[in-house]
Length: 480
Ligand code: ADP
Ligand code: MG
Image (cartoon, rainbow, N blue to C red; front, side):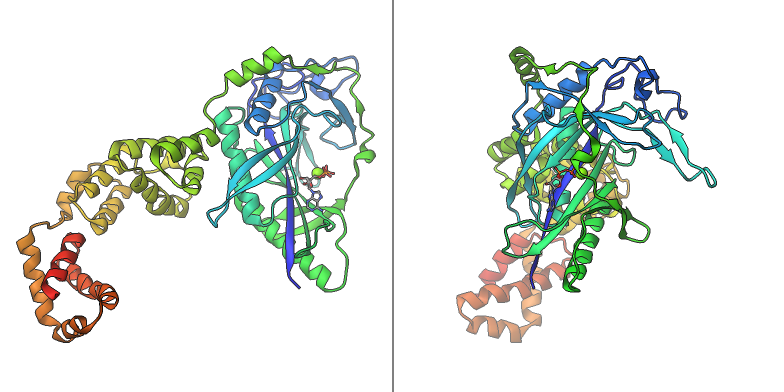
């Protein structure tokens, strides 16, 4: 049986407001426990919440960034449940009329295609406090500093078909919220968290299977692993003739497995009702227009500009525009070396590989944009060849800061002196009479393949310093 995975994500983004969504308490990260929660955040009797206009503005910015319908009248509701980190007994959230309605994002797939993922809705809500287990033997500590922090919950359609697609979607959302400046997207600090809903069905089937929801995974790598684990688990369950139960599961990164946490609650378990303390939120046409006018260039527009101005493929343009810092690095390299394709290839090849391997962000790259641009300029003006460029890049990665000095010190200068190369070519031809004979007897198509052997020999004899184009040309002349 061929199975197909179906995944929908609920992403919680902490909005970068200075104060909380319904109170003036600070949202700064890392304060002493319980020093930043006020009476409103705790829902003490007699308090009244006041909506933070900045949180509304940020939610609208997000909605515009995903082409969504903005509900210009939207309402807050109480979602009732008991949990130690929620002393109010309810979370103020949005249910029937969320601020952001249907929208979509276009994400890059590994195949080089672009896929459109539907966003069902995004709503504003407050965060709860935090339960702490580690430092308390046999007890649980409660830190309420996070209570009342504004969250935007972004709910996707079940349009994702693999863990890799889910990660591509998350990366797109991560890039977008940072372009918009509405969140720092710091996953390690919980500024962006993800619940993954996973089900499987026989390939070709159109109805959805029963899903499990994996709660609060906080890194791209763990989300990928958790989803893959869950897909395999569900396949095993179904193939053993059993049924997947709808439930909430927890991902344990140390054991790399998901475990059942509780049965899945339904919306009606929460007894949602409109919050009597908050008026409906009304966003005027003027508000909307002024927010629209204030939007920065977004990944999508940048993607289009990279395609138009730099003639990049849609896939390359998408990858390079996803995060603002990557896009800025690319633009600088492309402009300074005056070859966008070359800049794109090096960034997505050599540089990306190194950054990944060392778990570094582009902003932490030991090779800054101007240095990579200089290196690529030397490749373009034929001072060095591809092999020399890789060797020079290695030295730059290790900390060297002067490209020309590296080329000089490592003897990477390309030999473009025709006489010097011709001498090596003659030598190689004399050393391989048998191959020369075969080459001469071959037709054009075969010759094309065979010439690589000679080029390789000459390059080796020149210790990689010869200009491969020239070598090729000379060989063709001398062998014909
Ligand atoms: P909740 O989890 O709060 O009950 P929803 O029913 O709206 O909320 O679903 C939440 C998420 O689950 C959405 O992202 C949706 O796309 C996804 N989802 C719903 N049904 C399935 C399914 N059968 N398989 C995978 N994902 C699903
Ligand atoms: Mg859910």
